[in-house]
Length: 78
View (cartoon, rainbow, N blue to C red):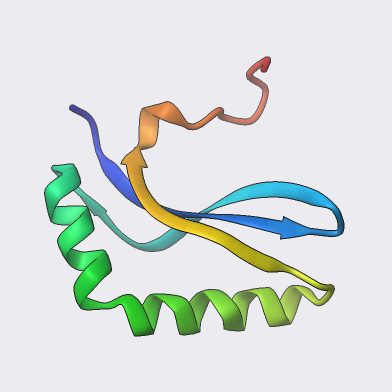
């Protein structure tokens, strides 16, 4: 298993986007979920602060953990 990260799925301007939480990467999904549960308030606040700076009507749909390799990188075809 590769590096695991916290991500958020958001709806902004009618488009669903996925963004990475830059606070941490983890060796296992269990470590990530534990961190997410422990620091849930902080993660939600920093995410909301980030979305407020971007402006618009962003809505958080989901926050979770996933392997970094499962995300499409810029330039990949979907």
